[in-house]
Length: 215
Image (cartoon, rainbow, N blue to C red):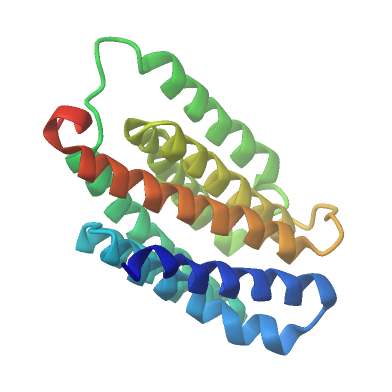
């Protein structure tokens, strides 16, 4: 009976973190960031989510910690951690999501591919030289994950789209584009929403079983 209360820990931590970003309380933001994905991972396991989903979220935690460390090497390692998490998500979508039918996925696939190509082209000249190819390759994997998330329904599709938006905001900062006020708040708001929606979609798809998931 205690399980339904447990997301309050994750929601409370997210609220404190986002509030700290808005108010400029950098020490609080740095201290709370590493706890966000482990709390979500603990909750999805309580709900009966697959262990691979917890692994994907914990890889996100590793990426979070590395990105806030600073420096190009830490950024590349953090991007690698997130890339590994996206591979976990792709495996989860294949296992628990619905199977594509006929040609219905070709038009959306073209749209996602165009979005990746267009975003990469716009950002390319502004990105630091050593980061251009890694960022483009990561973006392709991220786009594949976002497209694959559609297999878990509307929640998954929304989560994938938010992940694309969050990482596009990070890339725009790398390319030295003009930023909205408190850019880290918007990055984390979209990122937390993305991870929560993706996790919830996978848990629901797994609970639906072969009949509901098409697996």
